[in-house]
Length: 145
Image 1: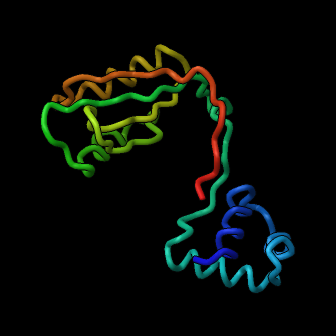
Image 2 (image 1 turned 30 degrees about the horizontal axis):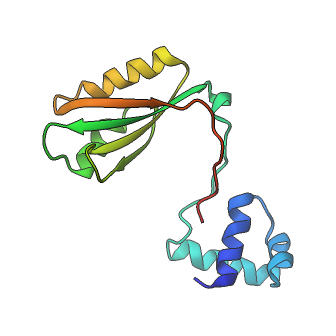
């Protein structure tokens, strides 16, 4: 991936609906050249998809938390995914270094929904404890380039 590819990605991250012509005008390429580069990045797995960004409150999610999950013993990433993926309020899961084994991003309708989601996470017999941090406000979110 070269500098121009990164510029193209920057444009796509800002607006996945930008036309190849608009992007090309900004990066100094023709629309077909931009399309070839985008197609190449898709084929190579550098671009994994195109999506819409939705305001969480439009889905009724007005409350969010990050939950540190501490397991009684080792847990594989595959098992983490298998146990947490069925919970619709769980929107992200990461294995992390430190005391906790995983960090779980939860988005919910209200505090009662957060509480029931954390209780659902705790239903796994291997979970020793959890620690939750409630998001008060979103200050800065950058596209991941």
